Image (cartoon, rainbow, N blue to C red; front, side, top):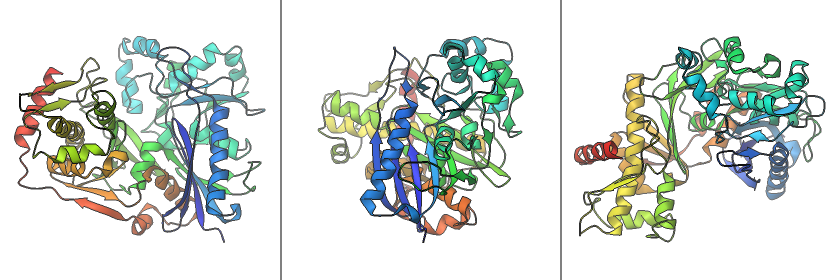
Length: 492
């Protein structure tokens, strides 16, 4: 009997295969890393064949680890690093060049020129919900066509296919039979009209991307095709759900109604707030993105990123060497009642939304002779929580309603003091789930809907289990903390 979903979580540094049962429990997990390629400063590439090999190896290893047979796999769900762009030959599925990774800045000059053209930035944001930036896929695809010999001509002849990593994986899993993406990934290309739910001819012309390259956009939960010719898997397993990693985490946290939000605390922090079935144009520099599509219903989210979260703790460990390991910060920070007036703005690589100041730099203020490393540790956790609070406050203003709870995941979500500080600053409950593999869980839920395990996302709610609720302390003294923070941000 088929009783597991195989969730493929294809990330920036590695690929993870997980087996998840009907109760949404992770019964097996294996990660395989692959090399990062840096041809020159500011450029980042991946070898698509290395990505594919890491996926196949992880699948084989998780089956061996658990003893689950391939016949017990009911379906496959995919979640992926977003915006990373690959072009391959339809005839033999071979990439024409390395994939250009979302981090790569090689097309920044193209974006700078587009941003100076009258009305163009406003029109792109109106259609896509995105600013013009090298982060997104459109200019990456054009660069590959312009800098790979013969590629533009081959594209015009219909010989090439393009996609983000989800599309490439479905193509390979299906033996080249299926060329699809879902709206959550399409909405990150800077080529997709998120209001009309179709590729935009206007943007394809603007960015010089031939329409014949593009995949078909299909809902995030349905059977797209079946496995064929994949080492270690039988033919015929349904490939049935997919979403970009942050949208998949939103789904995995079952933030499925307007006003629900999640924060993933990793090196940085990614925050998404579900906004319902209508896109909301942000007045605070946030991204408007598609969360997912189930059937004919498209749902949206606001998205923002804090560039430095867990990386600030790593800096204390590796740079200042005031802690030996990252978990140690909680005990050290908890040894003092507060930061003693110290404020740390962790703008080590600039400030993202809602401040958007790339020239900002990290700042520590309020130092006295009485300041200890414990105060700096406490100020670091405060700085992470305050950065996220600024972003969530901006989301509340855009949506026009207060946040009632924040669901959290990622490595730093294990820090109880950080989570309590976050709850006190927001004055709402912060909820940590039992299963912290929320990105893969979202892919599994979508695949479960696609194969009929769940009638819809709501039907999966009974399997979502919380680990701990951090209730806000109504007596928490946060007014002065936030005032000092805003003053420090202004100087960063």
